[in-house]
Each structure stands twice: as C-alpha cells, then as structure tokens.
Length: 161
Image (tube, rainbow, N blue to C red; front, side):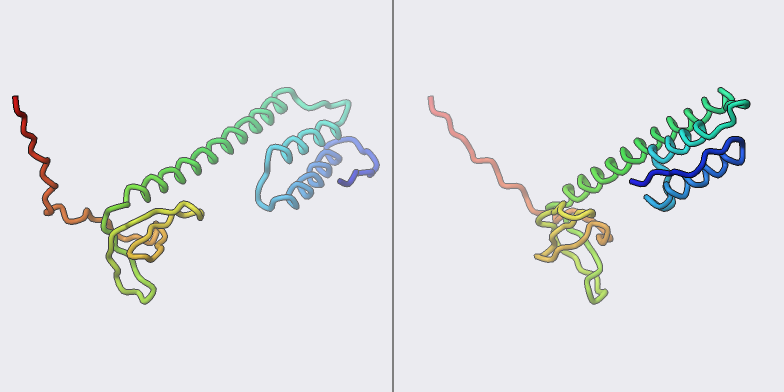
C-alpha cells in the first residue's frame, strides 16, 4: 500500500487533480470497472480536498451517495442474473437426460444420439451422448426418444377368497 505525501492544495483544481489521481489508482486495479471501494475513495478524496470556504453542496453529496447505492444494487442484480442463468443452464442440461439430441461433430457432420449423463464441472454444463462429451451450447436440437414402445404391462393380480 502506498501513501500519498504530496502537498495539500485547496480549491476546485485540487479536487480535480485528486479525483484524477484517485481515478488513475482505481483504474489500475480493474480496468474499465469502478467498484464500491474505488467510488468511496473518490468521494473521500473529493471531500478531503475541497475548498474550506466553499464546502461541497449537500445535494451534490446526496446525489453521489445515491449513485453509490444504485451501483451497489446494480452489481447485486447482475450477480443474481448470472446465478439465475447458470441455474437455468443446469436445469436445461438435466432435462436432456434420456432424450435424443443433435449436435455438430468434430468433422462438422451432424451427430444424433441419446443423452446418458450430465456434468456441471465446467462453466457450461456438458452432456454425454454415445460416450462423447458435448457442451450444452453445442446441442442444436432435442427430440423425445421413440414413444411408440409400449409401457410394460402391470402384473395381473389374482385375489382368492
């Protein structure tokens, strides 16, 4: 962790330079993202380097606090959406067991077979078709297995009195 020992200056120019310096430090952590911690650092730097004769307007502070809250809620919503999508993919893969699927094989030819198992080991679930592991997103069609096969008859029971 580095400590900033630059001289303290006051006024809008100081706030702008502190904000730019904080932004530069924040952007080295994760390029293209502004997380909660970076946002709070920017806000603290802005408050610390404001002109004492012209303090930050309370409505501006409230707006920035609201932006922080909105950012936190959007981050939580994004995480929830990602988890929901992953669960939907798992459910879709599980529903394929015992069904016939079609996918493009390594040579580009269309391959059709029954799904015998599902694996959730990777980021995308995989299904096993005829001993071959196929990513769920490679499956191009799904059909039910032959339904013309009659169900086994229930054994006849005889009751004697």
